[in-house]
Amino acid sequence: MADIGIGIVGGGYMGKAHAVAMAAVASVFDTPLRPRLEMIATASEASAERYRQAYGFRRATADWRSLVADPRVDAIVIATPQKLHREIAEAAFVRGLPVLCEKPMGASIEDAEAMVAASEGHVNMVGYNYVRTPATQFARALLARGEIGDVTWFRAEHTEDFYADPEAPASWRTDGMANGCIGDLAPHIVNAALALVGPIERVMAEVETVHDTRPGGRVTNDDHCQMMCRFASGAMGHIYASRVATGRKMGYAYEISGTKGAIRFDQEDQNALWLYRMAGPAATRGFTKILTGPDHPDYRQFCQGPGHGTGYQDQIIIEAKDFLKAIHSGEPVWPTFRDGLEVLRVTEAALRSADSGHWQSISSDQKVGSP
Image 1 (tube, rainbow, N blue to C red):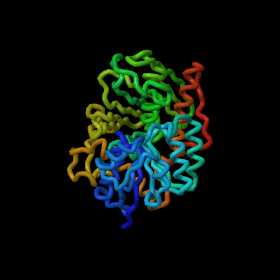
Image 2 (cartoon, rainbow, N blue to C red; image 1 turned 90 degrees about the vertical axis):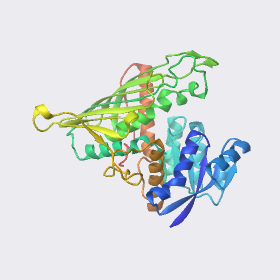
Image 3 (cartoon, rainbow, N blue to C red; image 1 turned 180 degrees about the horizontal axis):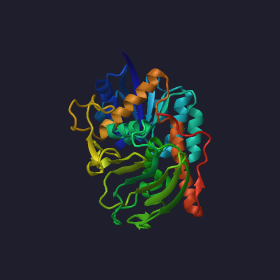
Image 4 (cartoon, rainbow, N blue to C red; image 1 turned 135 degrees about the horizontal axis):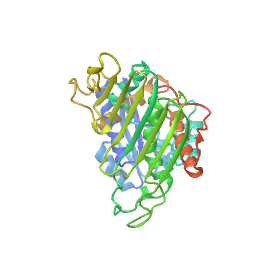
């Protein structure tokens, strides 16, 4: 087994999640590559040293360029605000380093397109962790096998309430569309739509700011958004994202109807999947609650007992395993930067639709890749 030096840029919420994942992944999955927490970079020397000690890195720096250039760093995880994603990724690819970049890719679609161009020939992945729950991986397998027939309808939401209180103060999250709901939350559930049902051809959207002002300043981005969509398969769909959905904490949920059955899932109960099969006597038909267990994807490595469940951090560990797999095999692992770009093409079309009041086609040279 070979060790691999990991450099993480960003030390906050996601920086910690990735550091914990890289420290644990080799033990959980017995990966051929064994991560070594080599260096962390944050905005100041003091915070970098604090995170180094807390997370177990060997070294720390306040200059991400020093991290990228360091010969003992073999792979990069970008966990910064999206305005820095492009510059860091491009520098890492110049060195030939594999890059795992948190979503969304860049602060604009132009950033994402440039990152895709720079990534050609290099290992790259985007951090969409929620599709990696054992339940959603199982849902994808059911759909691929045609267990519910042809998909006719898809409804999904990513709903939280961290800004439901109008007295919650203004922050970086309330400034600029890249940090608004359609820039921050919507990409997760759009990614789910692409993963579960396939490419989206066109959208009709509305984007709205519910609270125009907050203590400390004006709000310059959206609080919630909705879009009707038509998939390339012909299926209809509706996607909603909100940061003001009172009572919702992690409402990453979807309902999929097919010609032979249906699937339901809610991230707030992430270890259960509801499956309906249109078979047998009508009197005994109904949704079956399936508790995830060792027979579902990536569950057994965490726990031998069905129904015991996995959590948020486990999704990031699964993500780390897939990133290491891509590095070790040299083969792309979904979602790549190209797949991340497809998500932003959908949200960009949604913004155009909201401005125009009309349906907008998704402009794409290449549709989302295979998992």
